[in-house]
Amino acid sequence: MELGLRGKKAIVTGGTKGIGRSIVELLAHEGVDIGLCARSADEVEETVRALKVRGVNAVGDSVNVRNGEAYGAWLQHAVDALGGCDIFIPNVSAAGGMDSEKNWVKNFEVDVMHTVRGCDLLMPALAKSGHGSIVFLASTNALETFAAPMAFNAMKATLIQYSKDLAASVAARGVRVNSVAPGPIFFEGGAWELIQGTQPKFYDWALKQIPSRRMGTPDEVARVVTFLASPAAGWLSGTNLLADNGFTKGVLH
Image 1: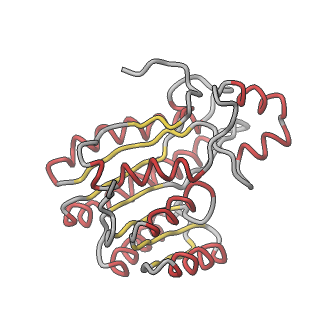
Image 2: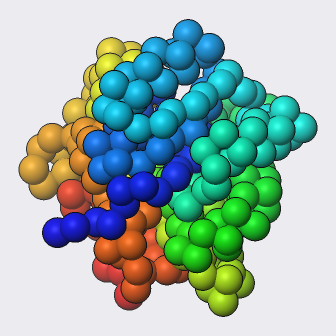
């Protein structure tokens, strides 16, 4: 199936490792020019080099998305450097944590507000595209109880609600908005590798909840995100697509 992505321009936050890295690599493989950011300047530089080898335009910078002014300036720079924006994928997350109130503040500022600010700033460029697409990264933690009360779970649920409302609001401007809720994804340096080493019983429990008895890979999530971002998914908007290989047990309706 032809996704219709060649020549498009995408901005991805947190594009140097894990799911974000797989997303930018797959988009570049499809001929998409990429603007990306992350905290580590060295990792951004390495990723930009790797993407350019694929024959696409790639720009990137070290950005702390909690700094609204710096983040906004980078987004505008990325739009200018790419010559527009057709796709926005706010991938950065503060991840889990339940030790103090600071996690609620951090997850709100990183997961929610960096997404909201990005959508607000990039909306003119996405609308000008005529086929703008936004894909949020949510989580199965947002859909059913998991582990313990955590800011991560609540903020990912917020993103699903926001994506649904935003999709209805901007549809007339030619912009689609969807979200993807991955289940447990294992990669080097990721949360589940850490859990495997520090909480092996919990890791084994989670693994047993997946019918195939294996965790997903960043590439498998990236394929779902890339499809949703593409013109091939032109009839999908306001959708939260569950990518968990049967990990959650609820029946969606």
